[in-house]
Length: 504
Image (cartoon, one colour):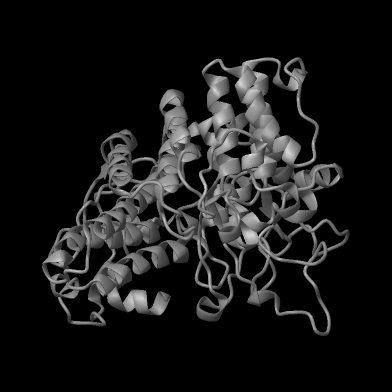
């Protein structure tokens, strides 16, 4: 799928603002003008495939363990640390010492995906002139996915880098000016991300059984609720989470969102990660086919070499010490000894507590991995957080307890100190999100969104910095470091872009 998509979308390799200049001098693989390419329904399907393939490359990676899903979502958090075989990327992330040479500071892959979405948005409406089989519903569902994908990519960009370049038209010619200055993150959220998602929701066909690998009705509502949570607009976040509840899940029934019974049962919780098509809790996961894409090598579990990332030792020991939490053995390698603290097992269908080894054991690189983007358990905990922030602590507790009880833990009482006040409840919900959504690319964004980075990370970073001989300053007081530096190649290619301070 990836090879075909790259050929069909040769123009999108002309990376837009912030892209790599070497692409601008390469000859295209096809001489077919884009406007002549979009003439059949299958061309729309190919365009959508290419867009998803680009996101897959960016999140899961190309088989070499370089996907950004874990680096962006958790690499700077208290979930993961550098292993004894670290690369420079995780070393910088785990010690809060980022540089502009870190490969995770490059936004080009997200802009590549945006460009593919822009190409599709521009050309999909033209296909009906040539192919009478393209219905309005098919056209609108296709456009909805493109608008939502563009919004999602920009949402990642503003959370990671802040201000950014806005591109809503495809970059189709090297004669076009690629040096475009950045716009404010607030403008991007309010004038691009939210309108794109609202348009996508208006276009998408409602009350349909979704394909879990595609953006559907519930996914669009989930992303919008996430954006509003980031903005601390809890009333709108609640509205859009309720829109998730009325949508259908992969099994063709509504998510409902009324009780713990609407979640995947405890006994089959792992279906969310190894077989998301079989659970109605799944909302959107990234597809992978090992026969086509080869190794879904992840830096937190399986790769062609030693893992550069391990589970944070404090989290590993504390979580493992709670035998009643059914998620522990389903999420991490709990065996003792070297080589086990660096393994996330959540996405793998394993018979035991660790990856099988020895004669007859399957090649560890042959497993399919389906990274989770959104699911109902995530929405429940966000809903609890938003309810708590709007003064409805009793219902916030109810949704928090739905997740805890499913995990085998006792329900909190409203009188328990952990949930006795709004601030206590928020901390407890965030801790529950850390465990329930471990290795789902959420933790760092949760800490930033709730202004908990310094509170949580100072102590963690001091321990790490002392261990590795770095200055023990914790996170420090310069909150400008919440964002990433912009990769130096991006700045070299677009002279209008200024580096995020205090980076150089």
